[in-house]
Image 1 (cartoon, rainbow, N blue to C red):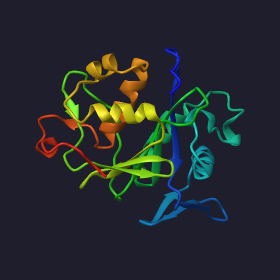
Image 2 (image 1 turned 180 degrees about the vertical axis):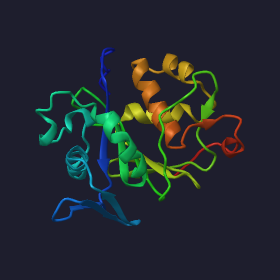
Image 3 (image 1 turned 90 degrees about the horizontal axis):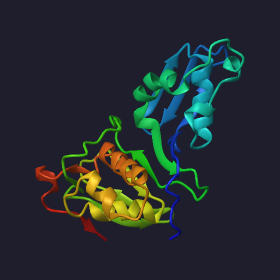
Image 4 (image 1 turned 90 degrees about the vertical axis):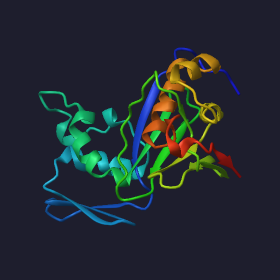
Length: 218
């Protein structure tokens, strides 16, 4: 494994699940998203909402780059992430979150929703030890390793060894500060992986009953 540059930049990417089909009505009054969960409708969507979701349907995007043509020449710049967040929160069951870095070697991990109610919030305490939930199972898949746990609303796919190294530490209780100090990775990479795992329900408080049994693999 090639060592990462300490100055590597974290990249947060967004996409729609592969089963989502996006359709805009003839007059543009509705956006219709069809998925395994049924149909979601957005009434009178802003052109920026449509353009961002259209690009997300094609694959992972940086929200800051997903500017609609109708807003490109606006007098005031648009914070796409802030503008889109309410819509993306509402559609969280359709959204895949991907963590990457700017080294052109592919994403670190992706988080896929498994249930219609799958909120995803990036926050993590640096003080409280965390570990894998007791029912966590790691399996090999073509794109890396898949991490799932009973009752967890998300599935995490680890695309690169760096992400798998962080997951391996979670077999025992560890704080994100201790994890960052013990791995040969830039601290911001370790912390970002842990934040994604925590948001996905794969890094739980070490004193949580669900974590007592430890993780299993197959």
